[in-house]
Image (cartoon, rainbow over all chains, first blue to last red; front, side, top):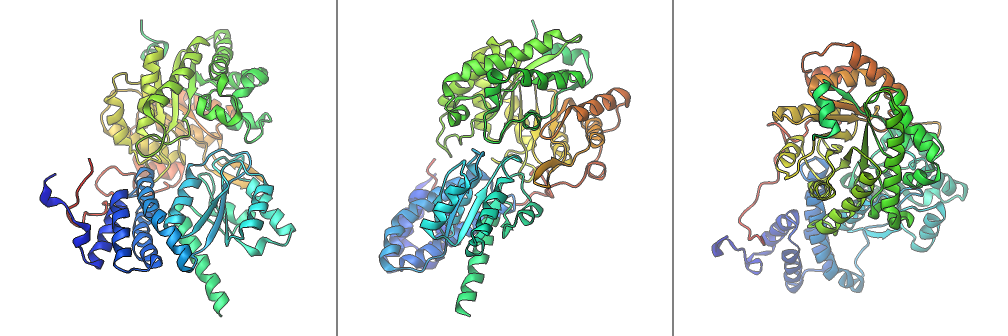
Length: 232
Length: 339
């Protein structure tokens, strides 16, 4: 490609730069995202604004196109990787400046199930939306979830299963939460290829999320309702 | 000398493959999370019963219990050192059933995905993937598998790695992908793109096609997509017996044997030459599929409307082929590219 096609990020004004970041996230260009995050910070942007206006904004477009069957897993993984590059710069700054929290989620694949691609994708997209993610990995018995809920105090519990034989275990976890009187302390989201809304309702989850993009939208929606309730 | 599957395809209009391995084994007491491949040595009588069930129901070929028999999957059960053994024994048990049958039966050595995402998007290198598939294929070959049968693949990189491994092992093969995401594979491969990929391979499969996925209608839309490319290569249709439903704490596939019989006949009319089931497909389904294929005459290629009318709705409005596909985000301006 010829030299004149090159875009010099530092020469763009703020609005143009943010638009360019949306494009670069969409194309999974990590170095460009890292550079642009640095430029916005130099220009005096608050870390929280860089996160929400540039990175989350860009990942929202990626998420919508993934949901609509325009983008697929490879493109989303590249975009999430670019976003992570930006997040690595922002994370310590966000902590320093005491920026508001979007929300926190504990996520894991249930006992008996060793699949993790879908769960990882949800984790990445949730991080892309500004959530803090605690990933418990695969094959989690109910004790793992309970312990993580205790120590991490998340807003949301996410469970994943890819096998029809392991999806019923989600109900075991939810029933245990009910028994211990903790069910209402968390929003419970479930997902995985063989699941559907009917199943989500049948086991007592708050929502079934068809894919990672829907998980993010649903999580945001629940956090929004929670904030409204708190401020009311 | 040509391989057994090629000869069988020359002599038969359509071959009936087998049904579900996982669903059947769970019915025999396999616990969720256990590696089914360990039963090849720990409970061989159950694996023999699984294979026998397909043969007695009329299948011309069955897949071995070796789907997760690669080092990456077996490592999750600390059995990565047993790849060769578990695949060899899985194929030997199959050989035992096939050789005792009164008609010719093909033993197809099942090879499933590694579960890893390959470079450049993920971390698994091509060389390592080839090595893992090669190790598995060697075990299957030594155990007497007639062919290798790659299934439920979503990435073209992984499909190519397996193709290379089967060449190295000197094993003829078939390969199917799972089209479960808006009519494409999870990695975005359309039916048309799969045909192009398959035809570009140095060592192409004897037959190729689709397995698992979402429902029977979706699977046949994919088969129509293959056929629309004008390929001469035999097409495989191995769809699930309907959609999983949660009933009283158990999972049940809602596809009846009668529905699967309709699916089998329609799959043939769509252009498939090797027809079987996937998750939820039990011997009673296979029996009805065999009878329908034997008794009912070949018909016209069905339209999508007819398919959905008989087999149920599609999971997505389009499948990424044709002109009504959604456009990608248009580039806003010029951008340097790193490649």
